[in-house]
Image 1 (cartoon, helix red, strand yellow):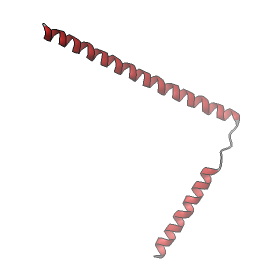
Image 2 (image 1 turned 120 degrees about the vertical axis):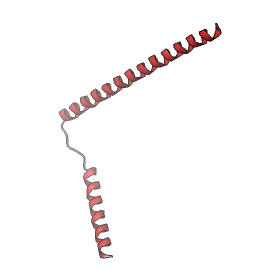
Image 3 (image 1 turned 45 degrees about the horizontal axis):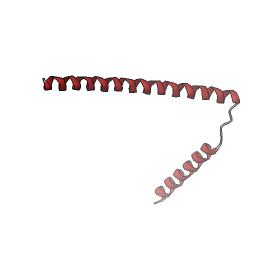
Image 4 (image 1 turned 135 degrees about the vertical axis):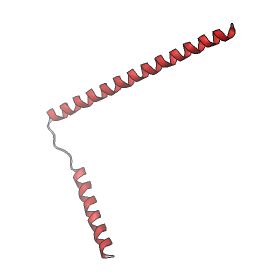
Length: 78
């Protein structure tokens, strides 16, 4: 019983310390924020380009499939 109480007390103290540390704002200079913003913009641009490429590939694949299906339909009609 004492072990459970001690472990719960320890766990509670760890959680309160971690939440307090997360609540303290970071002190950054303007230059660091600008650098971070540039990095985030670069990551977003890279991600969006990758998504656009993936979308183009899927559209191309879909168009090929449609073309192939249309050819099959024409062959069946003959």
